[in-house]
Amino acid sequence: MTTVETLLLEKTSLIPSPQFPSIIRTSVCRLYHQHTFWTVNNYPLLSLARKRGNRTRRFQVVSAVLEQERSSSVSSAVNIVALVGEESRSPLKKAPWEEVMLHTANRMKWVDEGIQMHVFGDKILQSKDPGVEHLTEELVGADLLVIVAVTNEESIDWIQTNSKNIPNVVCFDSSSTLLNKLGGSQLQGRTEGNILGKLLVGALQDNNKESTEVVRTVSEAWDRHNSDDIRFCLLVIINAFVRPVPILKNLRSRGLSTLNCMVKNCGSQILNCLLDPNCRKALQCLNKCAPTDQVCNYRCIASYESPNLAAFSLCVLQKNNCLGLDAEIPTKPYVPPISSFRGENLTHEVAEDLFVGWLGKLEWSWRVVAGQNPAYDQFPCQYQLFYRGKAKGSFWYEPVFQVKTLDGKMVWRRRRYRVKRDKIPGTFYFTVLDNGVVSREFWTIVDVCDHLGWGLFHYSGAAKAAGQSYTGAVLVTPNGEYPPEEERGKLISSLERCGIKEWELYDVDNSCCTDPPLGVPEGSSLHQKIRV
Image 1 (cartoon, rainbow, N blue to C red):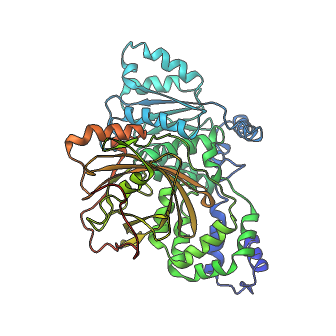
Image 2: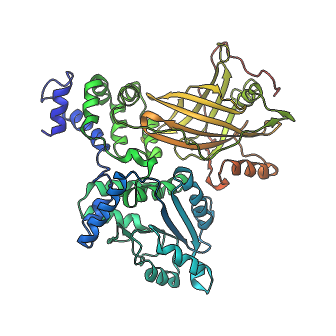
Image 3: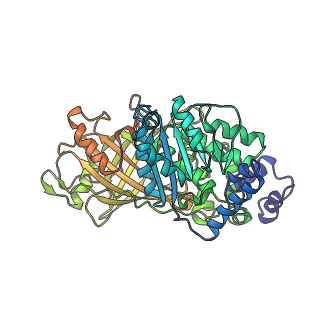
């Protein structure tokens, strides 16, 4: 019996003997290990570097990064150079890779001011372009070279000659002849389209579970092809090989105190969850996700949500914070709210009316056409219900949406948010208890056209006890169809105010939305100032 299992038997009266079912012992142990495999001396991918390459170099890498954490120099500069194949197109609605990486460079600054990323097209390597000199200068102090969609032979030769002293070189969707390095050590293995295949094979060859799990997370994130996950991939590599990234602090383990807290305070909730097939599936699914991989985590939760899962999360995370997690609402980007509507200055009452939208004329306020966040905005058939409650000054938001579960079923889900005005009209705080965890979000009405043909709402949020923060935006219309072409210029301008490109948006599938569970509580009220 392992130390973890023994502790389980000792610490909770609900586990009376060694005959405690093995599935329960195993599942709880896995849940515990989910939050410990991420660290080898606090930096998971270092385990791979420590097993490869020059012995002196290995320990220099480990010592340097650990010393950075001890000195808490998390704001020290990180220099990234991105080299992109000329005229290459990304899977993000065919947006040019160079544009995607330039946008990523800006978005990196939202989460960590110390990260500098310079983007170059590889065409400058095939001519006497003066930009080559600038690129060479940037490579001298680079911590990470990111190569995307580079296949030109002349470019490949130049990179191989000029990247020898860069400690971390990663290649995505590029030539298989390019070498990849992490922590100063080259990675070997068969090619599977990008560095991630090589990484995974190398980790498996070393039989290193920690490295394998981290690499799998990065691989899955890159293959999801969205702007949030491209940034996430780079942040994970920086966190592992360069210096700590504050937003990824929840990747690091908390020790046996986590398990001690769980079994001491939440024994009955653990038992009920593990005896419930749906709740157990949720835990097993979550066990495969990185703690900060919101897409993976929320897909598991939305697929297998149940009262027992909510009770488990409420006890372990929300009430007792057994995993020691924390997160704050992002303050960047700053998104200004709409200042006027139909020629008059916006008031709090009118702003709430804009949220209420078409409810009353239709059975819903708005339907979501597209959204930016890959975890929360991509669900099919999203309906928004905004209304004023019975209590004076109360205001509520209830999204209704479909989920295609990991078992292949289509199910309806519904949430209920309490909405409070912030100081500036058009800005609000939303609070929801979602499967046992409280999320708090800051919403901004970015734009609503005078005829209510479409609107754009931006949000920044955090599930503090789950250690996750996020941003997103939703484009809404009354019928779930994209605004007409003549509105496109104004829409793109509104997206720019959010720091969002149109190619980042997910198109919501509104093709088969049968029998949505709509309706608002009896006694609710709708508009106060505007007419629909």
